[in-house]
Image 1 (cartoon, rainbow, N blue to C red):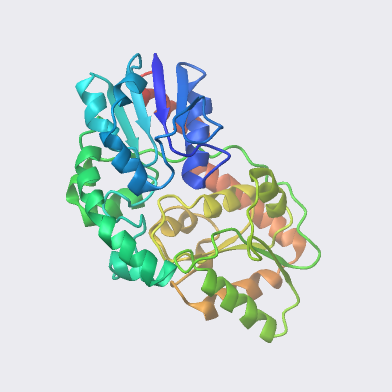
Image 2 (image 1 turned 120 degrees about the vertical axis):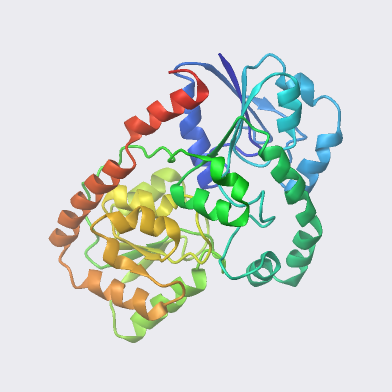
Amino acid sequence: MRILFVSELFYPFGGGAEVSSFYLYLLLRRRAEVVVASFSLSGDVWVWRLFPDRPRLWLSGVLPGWGRLLRGFDVVYIPRYAYFLVPLAKRLGLRVVVHLHNFCPVRYSGYFVPGLGDMVVDWLNWGPRRALVNGFFSGFSRVMREFVLLADEVLVPSGCHRENLYRLDPRFGRARVLYNFLPRLSPVREPAERPLFLYLGERSFIKGFPVALAAVVGLWRRGGRFSVGGTFWGGRMSRGEVVKALGRAWGVLFPSFTEESFGYVMVESLARGVVPISSDVCVAREFQGRTSAAGYICRRGDVGCFVEKMESLMAMSRRELVELGFRLSEEIYRLVDPVKTAEHVYRIFGVD
């Protein structure tokens, strides 16, 4: 069987969606021939028309030659935004699998904050100019949504993501839940002598950076002696750097305002044996809420709660942190079992 991945960005570029796609690539190439078509040089085939930004990408769908890219494959997998290829692939008789890692087909921004409209979210996150531009292109999402729903399989990374998509368009109730692959991470670690808290998200409103900043300032004003790291001071971290930093952390701040599709930061923290202090988004309840760290979930934007939970972790000894970490790792791997995920992937793609 020949499988074509069509992804504008491919690992090590991008974020959680690209990490998930890379793990699927590693799993599937054990049993099938897999080719990655990408704008990134990390792909197998470089396609200049797979622009990373959506307006140019979707407008490029009117250009000829896309059929030549698809011919000769049995399955097309679309984990990002190349939804315009779905009807063409169906006409060519290919099986199409679309993986939704955000809310793009129903919200152009890709984010969903209950109670806030798309334009308001964009305005708060990027300012008025970007909000107006996104509002202009929002009609594309409605068209692309219809293309997505033509796919043979629509995958989502969590039950919560399917539930939230269903709230926005009931037709997404047909989506199939496929947990993102979670590699085996060791809970054996040595927390730093001085309490260290990590923030590993984007420095944006939607990911809760203002809450993380306010919590750090609030704890400092209470006389707390601690350090902060991760992406709190800006920049990006490689996967290896993240795993290494988690080995020294006392806790991870996950203060997202938007509903997340999976929450890799939170789930990988649990797997590494680190307590995430999370906003009460749906995936936090689905995963963290079913572990011994359930008590470390706060209402969205509740800075006082984040400060209290950080103080609670600082009151623990390093030995207590490690013992709790072993329980958390065992619990999350019972929920997100990598062996079961791999079996599920093989069944979906017909290579089991």
